[in-house]
Amino acid sequence: MRNWNKKQYPLDSAQIHLQTFFLRLEMDLYMGVLCKGYGTGMEKQMILITGGAFQGKKAYTKETFSLEEDDFADGGSCSWDAVYESRGIFHFHEYIRRCLEAGRDISTLTEEILLQNPEIVIVVNELGSGVVPVDAFDREYRETTGRICCALAKKAREVHRVICGIGTVIKHG
Image 1 (tube, helix red, strand yellow):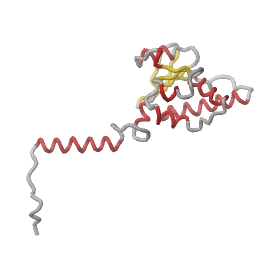
Image 2 (cartoon, rainbow, N blue to C red; image 1 turned 90 degrees about the vertical axis):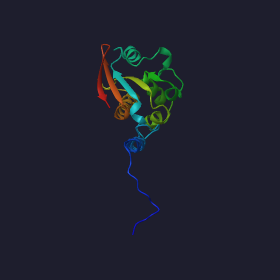
Image 3 (cartoon, rainbow, N blue to C red; image 1 turned 180 degrees about the horizontal axis):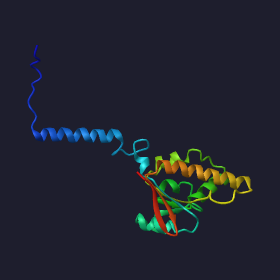
Image 4 (cartoon, rainbow, N blue to C red; image 1 turned 120 degrees about the vertical axis):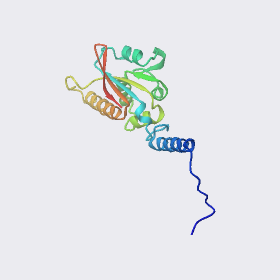
Protein backbone atom coordinates (compact mmCIF):
# COMPACT_ATOMS: atom_id res chain seq x y z
CA MET A 1 0.00 0.00 0.00
CA ARG A 2 1.41 3.39 -0.95
CA ASN A 3 2.06 6.00 1.73
CA TRP A 4 0.55 9.20 0.30
CA ASN A 5 1.95 11.37 3.11
CA LYS A 6 5.49 10.96 1.78
CA LYS A 7 5.68 12.49 -1.66
CA GLN A 8 8.81 11.51 -3.50
CA TYR A 9 10.25 13.95 -5.96
CA PRO A 10 13.41 13.44 -7.95
CA LEU A 11 16.35 15.51 -6.64
CA ASP A 12 18.05 17.97 -8.93
CA SER A 13 21.86 18.19 -9.12
CA ALA A 14 22.05 21.22 -6.77
CA GLN A 15 20.17 19.32 -4.06
CA ILE A 16 22.40 16.28 -4.51
CA HIS A 17 25.53 18.43 -4.20
CA LEU A 18 24.12 20.10 -1.09
CA GLN A 19 23.26 16.75 0.50
CA THR A 20 26.73 15.44 -0.36
CA PHE A 21 28.34 18.54 1.16
CA PHE A 22 26.43 18.17 4.44
CA LEU A 23 27.11 14.45 4.58
CA ARG A 24 30.85 15.07 4.17
CA LEU A 25 30.75 17.87 6.75
CA GLU A 26 28.99 15.59 9.21
CA MET A 27 31.53 12.84 8.58
CA ASP A 28 34.42 15.28 9.04
CA LEU A 29 32.98 16.48 12.33
CA TYR A 30 32.44 12.93 13.47
CA MET A 31 35.97 11.91 12.53
CA GLY A 32 37.41 14.95 14.31
CA VAL A 33 38.75 16.85 11.32
CA LEU A 34 36.97 20.06 12.29
CA CYS A 35 36.42 19.44 15.99
CA LYS A 36 38.47 21.12 18.68
CA GLY A 37 39.50 19.10 21.69
CA TYR A 38 41.38 16.04 22.88
CA GLY A 39 40.38 12.77 21.33
CA THR A 40 38.93 14.43 18.25
CA GLY A 41 42.07 14.93 16.22
CA MET A 42 43.30 18.10 17.91
CA GLU A 43 46.16 16.26 19.60
CA LYS A 44 47.65 15.97 16.13
CA GLN A 45 48.33 19.71 16.04
CA MET A 46 51.23 19.78 18.53
CA ILE A 47 54.75 19.87 17.08
CA LEU A 48 57.84 18.42 18.77
CA ILE A 49 61.36 19.61 17.91
CA THR A 50 64.25 17.57 19.28
CA GLY A 51 68.02 17.39 18.90
CA GLY A 52 71.25 17.68 20.82
CA ALA A 53 72.29 20.64 22.94
CA PHE A 54 73.31 23.77 21.02
CA GLN A 55 72.25 22.36 17.63
CA GLY A 56 70.11 25.33 16.55
CA LYS A 57 66.70 23.94 17.50
CA LYS A 58 65.29 27.25 18.70
CA ALA A 59 66.45 29.24 15.65
CA TYR A 60 65.16 26.50 13.35
CA THR A 61 61.79 26.49 15.13
CA LYS A 62 61.44 30.27 14.99
CA GLU A 63 62.24 30.37 11.29
CA THR A 64 60.24 27.29 10.26
CA PHE A 65 57.07 28.17 12.16
CA SER A 66 57.30 32.00 12.00
CA LEU A 67 57.52 32.39 15.76
CA GLU A 68 59.02 35.27 17.72
CA GLU A 69 61.03 35.19 20.94
CA ASP A 70 57.94 36.39 22.86
CA ASP A 71 55.96 33.36 21.66
CA PHE A 72 58.16 31.04 23.74
CA ALA A 73 58.36 30.20 27.41
CA ASP A 74 61.72 29.05 28.78
CA GLY A 75 61.28 25.70 30.51
CA GLY A 76 64.19 26.48 32.78
CA SER A 77 62.51 29.47 34.41
CA CYS A 78 58.88 29.88 33.30
CA SER A 79 55.80 29.59 35.50
CA TRP A 80 54.23 26.16 35.92
CA ASP A 81 51.26 27.22 33.78
CA ALA A 82 53.34 28.65 30.90
CA VAL A 83 53.35 25.28 29.14
CA TYR A 84 49.56 25.59 28.89
CA GLU A 85 49.51 29.24 27.79
CA SER A 86 52.49 29.80 25.47
CA ARG A 87 52.64 29.24 21.74
CA GLY A 88 55.91 27.39 22.25
CA ILE A 89 58.29 26.22 24.97
CA PHE A 90 62.01 25.68 24.64
CA HIS A 91 64.16 23.84 27.19
CA PHE A 92 61.17 21.58 27.84
CA HIS A 93 63.56 19.03 29.40
CA GLU A 94 64.41 21.68 32.03
CA TYR A 95 60.70 22.16 32.74
CA ILE A 96 60.46 18.42 33.44
CA ARG A 97 63.56 18.59 35.69
CA ARG A 98 62.04 21.47 37.66
CA CYS A 99 58.78 19.55 38.06
CA LEU A 100 60.62 16.50 39.39
CA GLU A 101 62.76 18.60 41.75
CA ALA A 102 59.63 20.29 43.10
CA GLY A 103 57.90 16.95 43.60
CA ARG A 104 55.12 17.79 41.14
CA ASP A 105 53.05 14.94 39.72
CA ILE A 106 53.77 14.85 35.98
CA SER A 107 52.22 11.46 35.26
CA THR A 108 49.51 13.18 33.20
CA LEU A 109 51.63 16.01 31.78
CA THR A 110 51.30 14.83 28.17
CA GLU A 111 47.50 14.61 28.39
CA GLU A 112 47.24 17.97 30.15
CA ILE A 113 49.32 19.70 27.48
CA LEU A 114 47.22 18.18 24.71
CA LEU A 115 44.00 19.22 26.42
CA GLN A 116 44.97 22.74 27.42
CA ASN A 117 47.43 23.79 24.69
CA PRO A 118 47.06 21.39 21.75
CA GLU A 119 48.87 23.62 19.23
CA ILE A 120 52.06 24.16 21.25
CA VAL A 121 55.51 23.81 19.67
CA ILE A 122 57.79 21.97 22.11
CA VAL A 123 61.58 22.21 21.81
CA VAL A 124 63.52 19.65 23.84
CA ASN A 125 67.08 18.34 24.06
CA GLU A 126 67.85 14.70 23.40
CA LEU A 127 69.15 13.31 26.68
CA GLY A 128 69.55 9.58 26.15
CA SER A 129 72.53 9.46 23.82
CA GLY A 130 75.28 9.73 26.40
CA VAL A 131 76.71 8.16 29.51
CA VAL A 132 74.19 6.81 32.01
CA PRO A 133 74.21 9.16 35.01
CA VAL A 134 75.56 7.83 38.32
CA ASP A 135 73.10 9.93 40.33
CA ALA A 136 69.69 8.27 40.85
CA PHE A 137 67.78 11.53 40.38
CA ASP A 138 69.56 12.23 37.08
CA ARG A 139 68.70 8.73 35.84
CA GLU A 140 65.05 9.24 36.81
CA TYR A 141 65.03 12.67 35.12
CA ARG A 142 66.54 11.30 31.91
CA GLU A 143 64.14 8.34 31.80
CA THR A 144 61.08 10.48 32.62
CA THR A 145 61.99 13.05 29.97
CA GLY A 146 62.47 10.28 27.41
CA ARG A 147 59.13 8.68 28.22
CA ILE A 148 57.26 12.00 28.09
CA CYS A 149 58.91 12.88 24.78
CA CYS A 150 57.99 9.47 23.34
CA ALA A 151 54.36 10.03 24.37
CA LEU A 152 54.40 13.55 22.90
CA ALA A 153 55.97 12.32 19.66
CA LYS A 154 53.29 9.67 19.35
CA LYS A 155 50.55 12.31 19.65
CA ALA A 156 52.31 15.05 17.67
CA ARG A 157 51.31 16.10 14.18
CA GLU A 158 54.99 16.56 13.32
CA VAL A 159 58.32 15.67 14.89
CA HIS A 160 61.50 17.39 13.68
CA ARG A 161 65.08 16.47 14.55
CA VAL A 162 67.64 19.27 14.30
CA ILE A 163 71.38 18.70 13.85
CA CYS A 164 73.78 21.56 13.05
CA GLY A 165 70.81 23.87 12.49
CA ILE A 166 69.35 21.62 9.81
CA GLY A 167 65.96 20.16 10.56
CA THR A 168 64.66 16.86 9.31
CA VAL A 169 60.99 15.94 9.62
CA ILE A 170 60.96 12.45 11.11
CA LYS A 171 57.19 12.29 11.51
CA HIS A 172 54.60 14.05 9.42
CA GLY A 173 50.97 13.28 9.89
